[in-house]
Length: 103
Image (cartoon, rainbow, N blue to C red; front, side, top):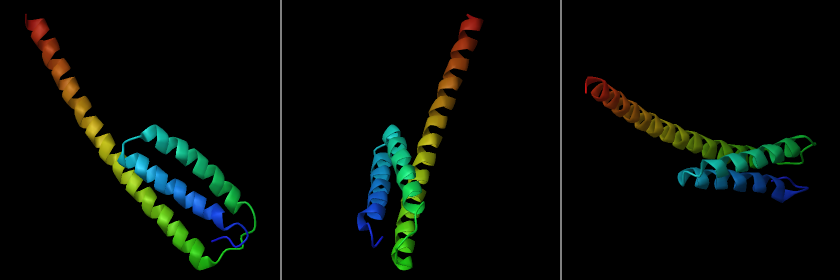
């Protein structure tokens, strides 16, 4: 993609793919670690003049955004699952407290 360093942007895309795989496996700490690395590489990549074909850069950005949307969707689903589990826990706790107070 970048004519001077073609692997730079591909590395960023690969990290995005790793992030998605980690998210699918619910390995959220690994997603965060990869995101930090990707953020650093993106800053470096875009901090210097680019010798990139616009079509290649655009395609790569679309791939990254697609992966990010899926990661966000998976994260939201996990958040909702945890919220429901916490609500159930709180309901049970309230029921136990009510039962203990009555007894």
